[in-house]
Length: 605
Image 1 (tube, one colour):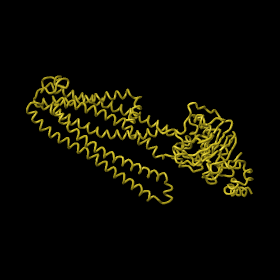
Image 2 (cartoon, helix red, strand yellow; image 1 turned 30 degrees about the vertical axis):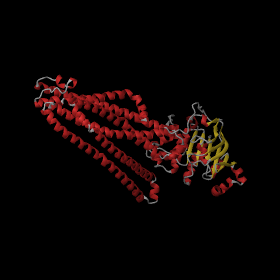
Image 3 (tube, rainbow, N blue to C red; image 1 turned 45 degrees about the vertical axis):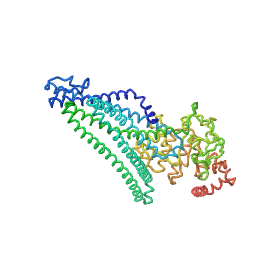
Image 4 (spheres, rainbow, N blue to C red; image 1 turned 180 degrees about the vertical axis):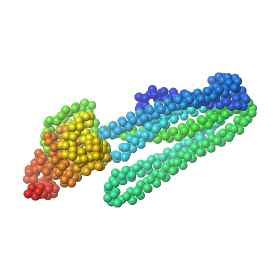
């Protein structure tokens, strides 16, 4: 009921439309009942019987019909057409209005969930896989939409229809109606049993379907590795295994789904057979007219449909509420990176970035310290290189500046402001990032370059200047549609160097005063690296740069070098100062940079 109450909160903006839809449903039910009442004068006129006196008051349509049989038929025909047209209109408007509400509600739910997800910290995404999050956005949200629009609409409509038909049944013959209701407990028991088994099989089917999706997504996204190791047959076998398991679960569910209406229909036919025997005696004794009996039989069959549908709709509603529970559980997950209510806006960067006694661990079972008591500062306009062995904490250090994570101890300050006291938008507007793993979108080249300057509506000339500075303009103009070329998922139609230069152009266009480079050329060949390095030089000009470096040329140009070791700052100084100390940096230099320097000197000769 908690999930249902929360869903009702999403209905509040559309409560007027919802109320009108309910009114239309009630009118639809009444019109269905009125159509059923027309059967009495039709069959009584055919049999030559007059009013039996069983139906009286407003339910006795014979009171409003002409007394002559020849005059009755045209009126009945007109009423039949009129009731059908009116019922069609009210049913259309009720169905459309509920669908309108459902689509709006699901858009609101998806928007709220997506907004909550994208604002989470990096550790949130480290704990959850992409398939899980997209399943919440798509599959679970679709089930919620079905529960709000289709299932809720049908529940209300079938409930109204059932009440109308039950009223008519008791009005026609209350003894016979009461006898039929004795079948309700066994029918309800059978329906509950079927639903319980169906729910179990559907749950198993969903789990096997999710497993099949994971296998497919993993193989498709890693298709280069699959091909490189010749594992196509193995991956096909894995998929066949999960697909067969999902098929068996589906068949088990279908057995119950198809068996339940047959069993319930058989029970209904037995009840009809008994009713026919009773009706024969009642009609012969004059207790019931033929028209009343036909109308009773019609209403009984019509009331069976709502009962059967309601039993199935209950399952659909529970499935939708279960999906809503999963969505709300995710939406209730605490935001790890939050703004303070009185957060201030940074208007620019002119002073320094300071790390003051910063310690950090990822938590959630990964409690080993990644950074311990780190303190240093970067003055505006400086270039600081960070070096160290893999796992020393270099990337984690730079991830604290844009608040992808928050320190466990200590503070990070920009121009004297603790970054936890400033707005995220103003903080991140001051920072541009270029990493080893380039993230591009399946959009045009133009859209990818302008991505970092969202909302500024930069001119075409500004985008082209950024591309030229990133040495990307030449290869962009050789693409089929130039700047309008769609580059595919993650920029697959481009080479590694081309993707990197687009990322640099994006950072240049953003024109942020602080630049973070995370091994931006480590995965490139020599020729591509030279072009990217020239583009990076254009990008770094006039900016405060923190670079995780693995190339000697970058390290030597730095104003200061910070050497990280096991989460601590082991050494700090210029290239020549650190070489003279004969410490960790010198060993890194001899292992990593010495061959590069010798090669550079030989090329110079």
